[in-house]
Image (cartoon, rainbow, N blue to C red; front, side):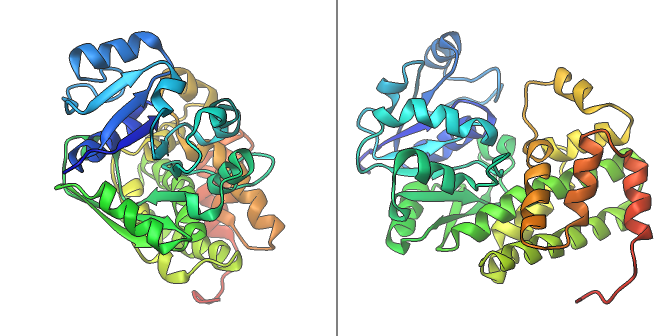
Length: 335
């Protein structure tokens, strides 16, 4: 198989794990590292001890601190930074991106203030058309992906031919990608599941069991679908890997950063204390405010996003969230 170059920006947990997928699929991969010492460690030891300790990276994965070097000759650029920092980072990187490169978002968030999805930010900063912008979303907990445990995901691009090309580039022995043209649905499913994961984590942290978590997952999915369909998404997307699949993985696994963040909130830690205790980013803690505002803008009832945002901001306790959910007016399930 002939190798083609992919640049992955940057070398966090998901970026590193996805570099394993890319290398196993036959690509030549360059990881961009924010810290020069981490790039040296990856090149010398073929391991990222900070974000995927114990995972041996394939020989075709290299690392660099020089973003221009990482992007040179790359026909696919994978963006794996925290969502709230994408605009600033991409503004710096854009001059070095190859003119026809396809930009692939692994990020699952909605930008604070603008309420833009990541594909919209990419388009605004780079000027790339929809045929050059894609997203990957699905039940993809990064430690399991890095260990090459079997997984599936969705590669979405408005240009179906581009989605199929990326599908071929990302298909490895352990990673099965499906295609979609519903970029909007995949992005909203990926962003919203983090917020629901926080809610489920709070319930677990409070000591509640499977009935409570199943109820939150189900109502969270209904809320996600309400907003996504209002904005024009295909409702079937929310029933698939980028919707229900991702939601189940995030809400049921202790590997999920968002569920773990929620558990800590449920046990009484403050948002500030949790941020100080880890270098990992729980996207839902940032995007809950954006998704709440997006729902309000489009007159969509979004109690999960509303209450999670209030807890993260310190305006409500996790127990208060549970009480508020139960106290809401009763109605038909399909209303």
